[in-house]
Length: 410
Image (cartoon, rainbow, N blue to C red; front, top):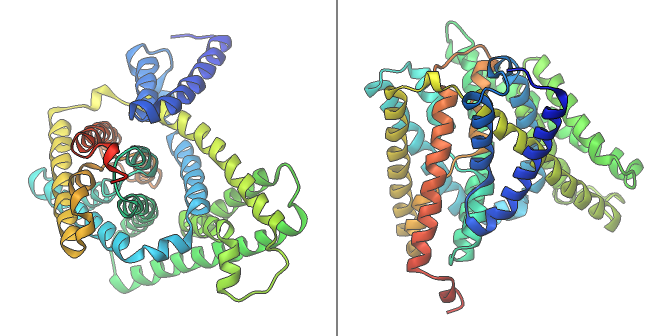
């Protein structure tokens, strides 16, 4: 169907406003704007065919890479390393337990019962293994839960972003070898990861020096930061290392530069009130950029969704995976509450707080970008996003009926 440029501009503005209004309604309705945005993409793409979805599929890898870099930049800059270390034991053990149990059970389900290839089963198991920060924090912030539970769920989602991206990138790198020699693969992966880590840290430290020495008051310092991380990702990928890990380490270094300097016992005049204010402004601008990218990425997902690929098998896979994810969280939550009784009251909420989101959908494009075709992967991940979000909303509502907000102060 032919559409003119004025229609597309109007549609562009409409999408931005829907994303903005959805963000406002998020806190009141507890329905994430991602559901609205994907629905809009479905309507203007596969349903009404206003935009040719076939052509968009060819750009999916590039779009997903940009979204991935923006996610990594925000995740790293917003993560307080001190807070992570302070609550490290409970959050990390719980996160790893849920992640490993979910990944293992989903992999076995897909490989043994659905007869998927083992590597494909493992990739989908990893992708589905973690929650999304934005939805979790918005729902939990309005629930009568302890600060310990809020911190636990927040850190789980933050750690998941890092874990899912890193593990999938490493798995894809392993799958590129036609014959796998354990020692050779291990050396290459460790070399790739170490190069990415060192590159991200060194470029991060260099950029801190330049940013707060020469560009502290420049109005476009965020744009320059984004440009640096884009170049870093491209450079590291071009030499065969992990661009995603390099981008993450870079953003962690810049976002926590004060703590980094103190930890390394580096005396510097860079740590001033002005530099901290500059960092706050950069993070504030990052929120707007992330919103913009996230809005269009979710609409993009709806646009390229293929109803032709939906089948009884895919629906069965999705329902089976959702059941498995709930079981994995239930046993992990029970183990956590047995370890520490303070989480007992919130076990049901912790179990149902399993919404998947932007990280899972972005990472779902990485296999295709690497030349690995997994039929129905995007459709499966999108359906899991929908269903898991609905379950989280219902779970939060049920929890509030049992423990209303008025009990919070008691």
